[in-house]
Length: 137
Image (cartoon, rainbow, N blue to C red; front, side, top):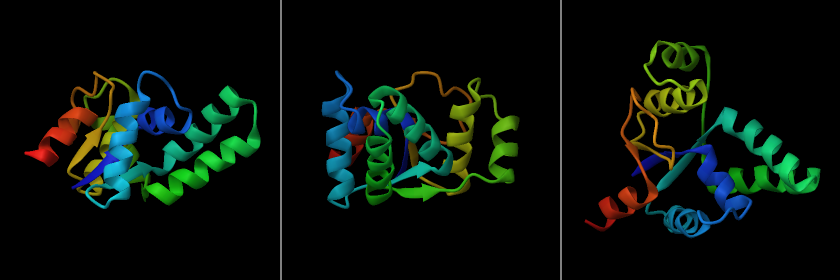
């Protein structure tokens, strides 16, 4: 299964944000085992760097977060077509719409998030637990 991992889940793992770490670890274990191919949008990398640097006050930790993301996940491009698709979608949050449009343009199977409002997304939206349940079924 090929899935786009929402930025918040990546940050949950990298910044050890409780109470979300256990679920994020389970997802990334599946990715490391090759049971799931994980993707992040190109725009997520700048968000990850910014948030990691702001929360840790360390450019080294922020850079390490990017390196780890690149090691674990494939990168889903964000180009003009993705932006136009996001603008045309009914998803109320533009950042979420860009992620969903990028995943849809790559024909990924789902977007994995803990965000409840991906209404209007152009792709299946699952929680980590829903994805794990599908894998085990």
